[in-house]
Length: 539
Image (cartoon, rainbow, N blue to C red; front, side, top):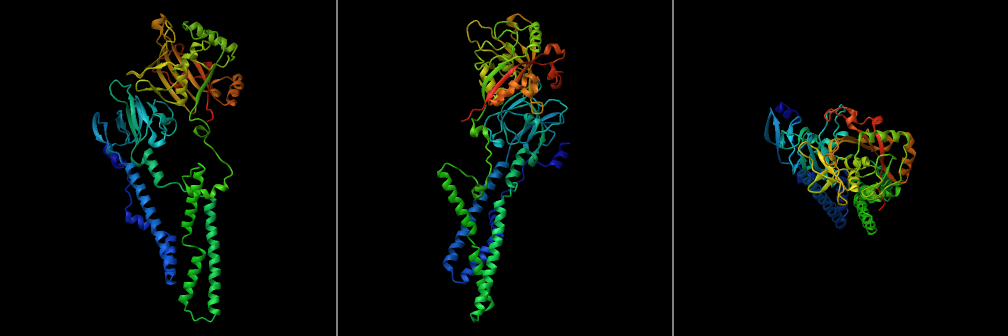
């Protein structure tokens, strides 16, 4: 089976070889304008314009040499990018074997090793991984990848499945296994060679999509006008030669025609345009305006609309946690009071009757006005991972939320369960511990993410352990209609608004293994806890 797939898909490599220097020169000098230039310079030599002709030929040849050198260096860099030598632990015919990454084929089961590069596109089927994707996206922050769940939705590596996909060319910084039979996370190969994300990137570099600008299209009209003008001027020149009584041969008259054309359409016209662009770049640089594509300077005066990427350009690079707005409940605030089933029923009843927001709270780690369930949600409703001893890595909004609550995140155990504990802000205070049993990653279509949490602090509070479901997402998806007006007001004030909601998992009468996203995130079954407000402040 693997041999047949190898014949069908080929080896896992991107077939690219840099063009030889002689072929680059052939390609460079095989354009129409080079032919035009050299024909004109031959005529100039025939007219004894030796010094000028030799000077301009030197400029053209030097320019061609520089272009060939730049292209050769670029192709060498691309060839270096396509190379990847590694070995993989692959499961074939029921046995694990070490193979060169070149012979991995789609469908292979591969162990994801820590501190190693990814040789092909793969989907995680067990365990978690922390990946550096800067080589593909330019984003320096590590990205968390989780195992793909058995769901009815179609797998799309660039859509909802991106959080489960390990892309070729990236590097694994840290992994976590949830499979007792394997020491490393497992992944299934989905694409190799040129069909990987890395292969697509190389293809885009080698064969970029051609963009057409009105300025460049109008240049053709300019050359047509100059061509017509040179033809008229040539006819007039021939008439002058004939009417002057000169016995010049047709060769001489043809040379005069070519010389006239070369005066109208200068062979150094492209060089002149390039010199103007370089000078424009220098003038813009003096005003702290940098241009990476000088050819676009000429059309900048035609721009009618500027579109700025707000985040990181006009505003700061990321979101800042601003405040929470709890919903009024009769549940005691963050205190030593334990949560009981009666409390949850009271909360549900109270919400349905009142459903009003409390005041905006900014210092969430110190406030005693935030209900305990909302504290739990802020501490656990995320997909963060512990990297190293104390660094928390994941979505930036979730990172800011967790940093605001100032709880402690532990490393995941062999079952993939990680524990979150509250800090001890004063001696004798109860420490709350929550185990995150299951996560449902953020879904762009549903605009929500959810977790199933077990209250592990019961062992210290002498109360039975309880399990909770917390959901976080867009307020349009999570809040009843009568709450929208105030939530929209927060958004109009510049806030990025997310909702938090709660559900008692024990009342669902299902096991953790049977808990699917569809069952957990039933909108009518959740109780609104409140809103979170984030801001992206201007620089």
